[in-house]
Image (cartoon, rainbow, N blue to C red; front, side):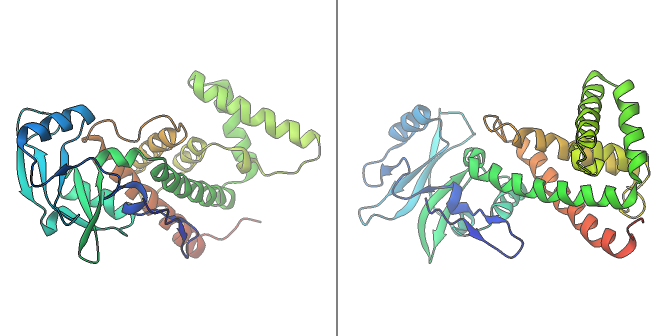
Length: 283
């Protein structure tokens, strides 16, 4: 497909439907004039697909065979490609995910200037470019939440929290607290004056904001909402941090990914907007 990694005003790499989808020249297909249900089912089962485009003699696709139920290769129906089956090929990946969730679909044909030029399915969302997009969002969020904590909580209180975490809590929490403190004190001995927030993991920021009640003022979350979004964002962060792990393994997981994605955008907006207007840096 097109490698349209274009940089936009917010500094993110632009990932579109055509970046992660499959082009007309590359997709698995059948000839429209000779295609039948049996041949389509055999091809779908062979490649674990729910959709097989049918290409006419003029080289364009006007129809497709689709399974009646995802992953069930006993029956297939021949359908015309309608407008609702399509998305513009330059649709941003965030809107692609939203369309899949809102319309409860497993695929879209991609259109460009009125012609079908490709296809994107749920499986394509496990493409590495989608994780590249999510990684950029999480980097921005971690940078902004670090600045927020640095402005809001005195450094000695952050160190105190880490010392408590290193002495108590779960094994994982103790290990992460000890690791951060070890690097912080070692660098201090080497006269590297780096603020403690530069060493924290994303989960540390969430715990600190919750402990200090900053989710309420100035971020305007209630405690339950804060717990839900922090848990969700941590979840998707852990997936993105492991390149070999798929983003979604079955269709039902996509709605959760969408909710996590919305949470990232919302939290980063609140951090940038409200922290800059309602919170002054501490001396």
